[in-house]
Image 1 (tube, rainbow, N blue to C red):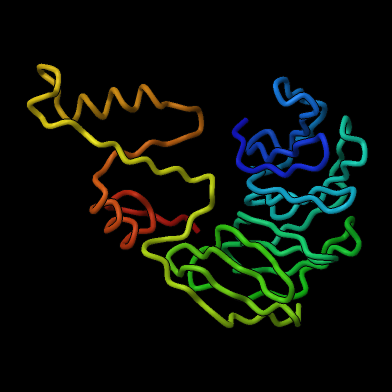
Image 2: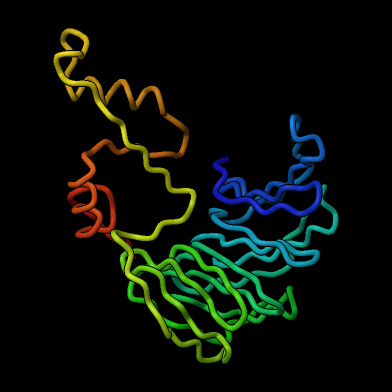
Length: 239
């Protein structure tokens, strides 16, 4: 698997484990966590939140998965909702779930019946939403290059964007990692070392399954991301 997000309640951690779905891990002994249960989801589990006896999973192309976790050893999908687009984030407030969805923007879902979640409203966002948090009557959406959006959700059937904060480049979820490497002067490099060889060595040193590594310079990185939304000079969006 590839752990994308985690929610913790008591002695259990609930991990959105991408291809492996939802994994439930006993963390009562922090030095020796043990997997006690799990359920594979049809898509890629990207985000997870807990509410009562249910876990709500943002499952990429397959939308929202509602999983009963009252028995951690045997979690079970009891409800699902497949809106168009890709669901990247989820938040819960009361009887409503809020989805960061590439087609709908912010989608408001009635989950009063966990077995039959239903879309009640949505607010289109200027760019792809990557994550969402809800406090009171407002949802806060990380919307890629559109920055932080503040959405009034007091009327769930008609959520309304009421504020926006531009960010220096693009707001990203916490599972995106960026590291700056400070190099010694070239005359202090090993004989025969080049930038190409250095990139190859660094890639081998930090290689992880499911993670794509890009090596670039800080300024051109920002320019590339502002123009394409990804860390390369050419970006392709697949809709």
